[in-house]
Length: 390
Image (cartoon, rainbow, N blue to C red; front, side, top):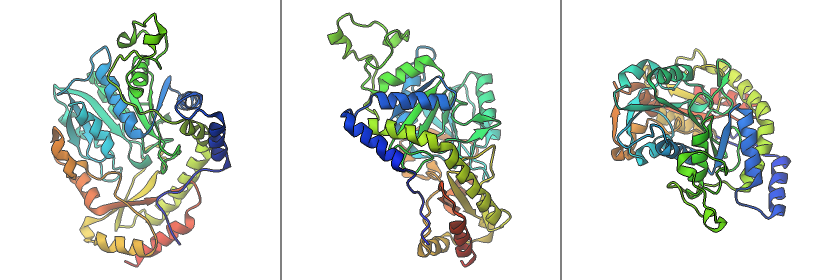
């Protein structure tokens, strides 16, 4: 039977929400987006959430806000410690704002940054650590938080793949000074396209709202005390188009906000089913020497199921992939693979700290199959049977 990478999580509630927006005649960002932002912030126990059109845009807006804040803004030439495995748009905004990346290897079993290497990555120019929880599995966020606090560094948490995961009772996406989420089609909740910037810092929230929408002050509260955004014009004609920081147009549509409200209601149940599928996957493959599977750190939200072919057994990945294709089992690279192995790296000011052997191994020998908020017992049993036949 077909075993796809992703599938819709929508039902009649989401379609009704879309029809409600159609009937309203208001399609660009408005009350539906505002209500979703408020509900999302409340769900994660954070003060502020700013919705944008993608998780990638959330990363871009977050980096930009950090560059325009009043106290110790990020500046070109500052260094950022990053994991060698993540999606490309974890890294692109850092390059676009002139920051130098210091790549640290991952742990082979968790696929998250090896925090034992943080001290080696630190230099006098280090300003920020980027924490990424890969495919639902919490990174060592508590260790990174303590590391940053002790050294006056920013913790940037890219939680685009791990909505609903938690570590020591604290939700992922709430450890950072800035935190980002994605609500893309294949993610834990889907608003078609979408993402969120989440923070407890009111200045960064106000900056993000201006940056999201052309760099104007119109979407910032009138009583904002943020230096760059104050000085309101007495004439509403001019105030409506007062540009205060360099910005973009990364607004979400009202459809996305309306659907997001419905998806949030379903999140707990969808996570429960994903975790039940994970129990079966781990039961099937834990202890199988052919595969290295993800070791859960904290409580994973199990975006997918990763598999790395044991290099000591010299299993031919091409043969495995061909068998999966013939069986109708979809698969793909683990997140974005090892980023320094991609051609885009030639445009980056970067340095690799102490080697990235594990990230390279995952890149060259790994893949993942999908997880869904429905029972996957049959699909996972088929996966096991196919792999046993290779």
